[in-house]
Length: 173
View (spheres, helix red, strand yellow):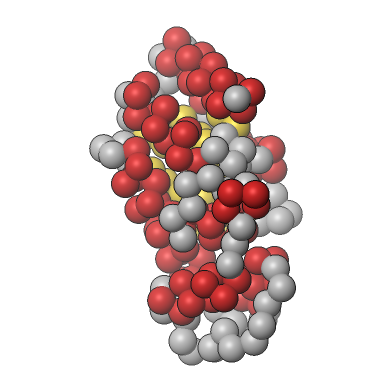
């Protein structure tokens, strides 16, 4: 309840300050990466944590005109896979399904045949020098964007994948 109340309060502030564009971030590193690259006003930034669906539905209620969605790999992958609440307790990632999902996004040339124990292992496999992750990261961002826009209805969403070093490494557009 505290998280959802904070999201709503943050949207109250953004709306009161006349912001039409907001940034929903899964965590502080993602928020910081967006701030450094885009430098929107402070009140545009809303920490959604794991409450993706709630935050998107609230943004719809408030009538925001544009949403930036920022997350690191594991959260972005969950969002792309249509997980409404990304906390591990409610939305634990099934790594076999994640691999199948990635194959469905066009990953066939390097075959994700090996077993993975974490989403981080998948990420590290993808970014290894023998693979070309850019199209895959773009496809994951686009899938996350589509899922988020489905929830937020008519509000355009731009999803931003943030590296574990704290930089935006890919976006849906």
